[in-house]
Length: 158
Image (cartoon, rainbow, N blue to C red):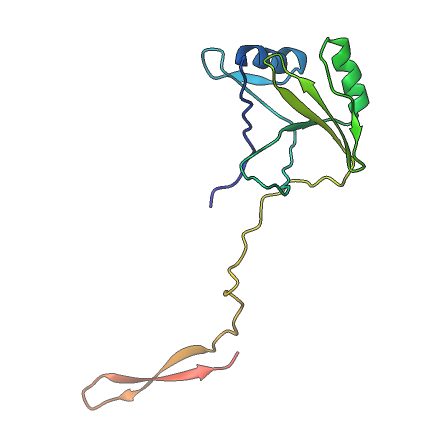
């Protein structure tokens, strides 16, 4: 089985150039240019959650910060509009407006944070450890009439 090494998120935008410049210049994300100005950005540690929904296939992206109010102030100083932070108890949410017309969620988690370690391979439910069988050892006996030795098997207890 291949190992999960990270997550690749895609933001669809009416103005990709402006939004790529925003992530590069305003948020300062490290990036590589994979050709023709197509930037792929590195992200810090991430997490994923599944929420109930009537409709499947919808996804949201939130960048996590350690202090939403400080983040909103720093974005305001750079001319970036953020929504009013909403304290949900388990975290504080806001969103910022991207130059391409979209929005990006910003999230200050207040819950326990998981850490990544490579997933453990699970054993199939049917592969319970069975008691081992005793070893079988062959002993040689006296030669038979045809000149070959006969073999007898003896079970040896462990």
